[in-house]
Amino acid sequence: MKPHLSLKNNLLIFLLTVVASNLLHAQNNILVFQSDFGLKDGAVSAMKGVASGISANIKIYDITHEIPAYNIWEASYRLVQTAPYWPAGTVFVSVVDPGVGTDRKSVVLLTKSSHYFVTPDNGTLTLIAEQLGIQEIREIDEAVNRRKNSGASYTFHGRDVYAFTGARLAAKIITLDKVGLKLPNKVISIPYQKPVFDGSKIKGGIPVLDVQYGNVWTNVDQKTFDKLGVRLGDTVNVRLFTKDTTAFDGTIKYVNTFGEVKEGENAGYFNSLMNFSVGINMGDFAKTYKVSSGGEWFVELSKK
Image 1 (cartoon, helix red, strand yellow):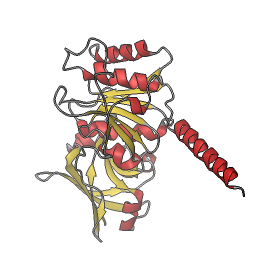
Image 2: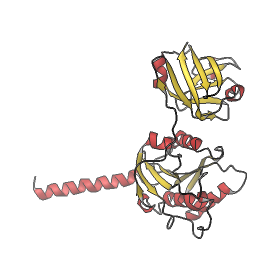
Image 3: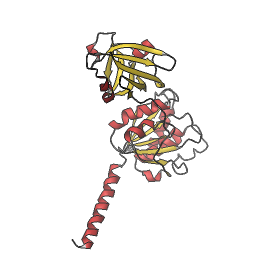
Image 4: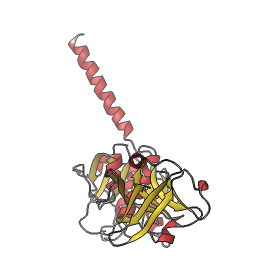
């Protein structure tokens, strides 16, 4: 092959790679909000108003605005619970920000799955970074990515910085490189108990409750659980505890669905994220046994 043809082919391949990369990470006009604001006042509406003012073409949705106040860990969990089911290019704005106005960084993270997350870097990105991977992180430059004439406000960055920046991204008014300074690919991470098998039992965490029904969701995945050698229909020893208190210590039948146990009976099953969970058929396990969730709550499983 002649040298000049080889150079042309290499250049064509390079240009196609750049175009493909840009298409892969392109925003898609979808903007998804999450916060601990609740819906009792106008905070959520104000954020959506800012976003709508950026572009009428943005499609706005919600994960939830009922994250318990200041609960950064639950914000992290709800993001990773839902984000993988949204199309590549979706922009998420998550505002659980007890440090608002302090020196915590405001960032946009692009995952390897091509999802964008606009949020304070305060632990909210713990599980997203771990499970979806980090493609790039930028610190929001508020000199250019902040709602006009909002500089005197220090306590509503959800409206003035995150909704504004997220909407500009979703609407393709800016690309990631226009957000601000590129940062190292690491985030503030909240420590938690990962599921481990020691040869006879599994220890894991209780990251969140299924709040509508009172089921207790652990982070023990199917692969780790299977190391116990427990089969469907068998019973498994379950202990739910903190360092100071054991809320539940007993045997529970392992089933596929609640219909396989009697009403009012405990059941162990895999939830929609394929993590081992426990509940009561037509009842509230968490309330009955006073179980909560978070970094101080643990689960221990063993074969009967």
